Length: 123
Image (tube, rainbow, N blue to C red; front, top):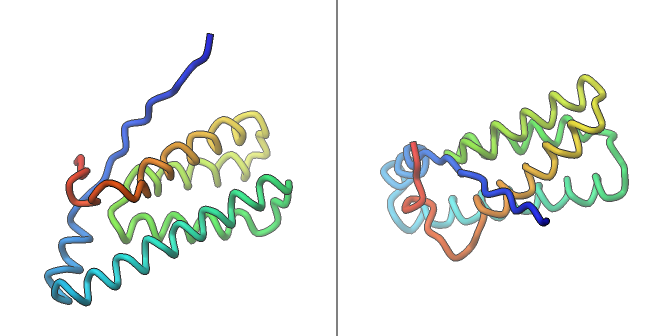
């Protein structure tokens, strides 16, 4: 039997709407696109570190990911990044592996390029 966990991704459209309201459409699109790209690069860097079993500075990078996600209203991504940090803090490798896998699933769904962030908002 193969288990296929389905994650409910929670997002808040407020931060993105605020960026658009404050900057206007063209500037906001640039800012949001750049922020999402930076978030994706951060996640890719984290994944590379974990694959290499290089946990040095992982907590700092996870905190950065959490802040970036929160600034974009990616609630689930920010919460799960905090959970991964908690697993590292207590040194629980089994929990780390499980929560890391969850972070990867949440990131994949949160950063899917084929969906509009505002349309997927679940508060």
